[in-house]
Image (cartoon, rainbow, N blue to C red; front, side):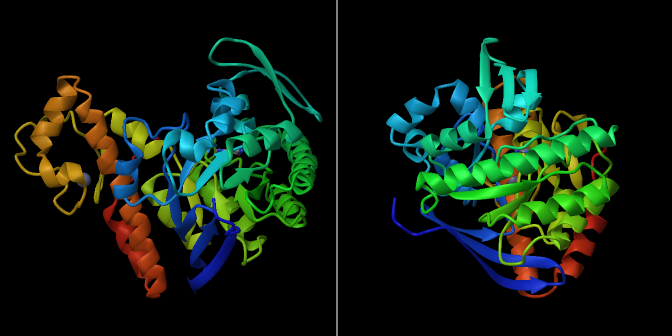
Length: 377
Ligand code: PRF
Ligand code: ZN
């Protein structure tokens, strides 16, 4: 680890879209940035050499999973997550709250933190804002996240407000724990804005969270069941309340069209399991939309799935062969599909960066959305 500290440089803008660069102790990454998800210290099915060759510059991992298995001490004693998993570039870890709420069995939430049961063996655990930060110090990612409460049921505004206010108290506790630890030169800490789909709460949350001098600001609580229009409106509204000199991270987003639309609103960073998760089910991105490789029409396609794609799968194999691998249940199928989908997304990000730098992002976006047919989900 060098002593290069965390930084963000805004390189150019085009409308509200931004082109920038983050600097971390493990190198630089260009924004708008997509972070492949390595939940359990692996991008499922791929080596990190492959992930790097796809053009990924930063990966995301989860403190919730690593805390439960193999344990924070084990990762720390192995030399930190970079050494443990063999990825020398920047890493961001999510704090664990969101995963404990969504994967574990929730036992109790109060202002101190949450008590939950492990999704692995049912054992009982407690996370607090303080312990979430200490866990992430042990794991050693370049960027760590505040402990927050995401509300999944958008129905009840009182519950949304309560979770938002708790998230604000926890954000201050996370900041204080991090500031006192002496780790703040080595690891950047991002705050998270919550507030559901209630515009007034989102404005309040952006104001409160940006009142704390975090290294970056995330938008949480979206892509959890609200409509695309609500997600778009809330993202735009929150971006207006964020400082221009810090990176903005939209958590858990998204599909190709969500990425393009959110970059247009001024988001700099994304992570999503979608490209790798759907790849394992044989769903592949193409410039005109997502296709299922199992479809009969690929049985005799002795040409690549996408002849505009520069990935290893499209460069070496036909669509008919990919379909055969899936039909035969061969593990190379999901691997090649993951390579293709990640490359599709990472190339989309690279194309957006060029378009912003050359001030032609609006035309790029219009053309992309015109050609790409979203999948309803
Ligand atoms: N909070 C945290 N992680 C997250 C989310 C959140 O709200 C989301 C919501 N899409 C994904 N990951 N800490
Ligand atoms: Zn490809």
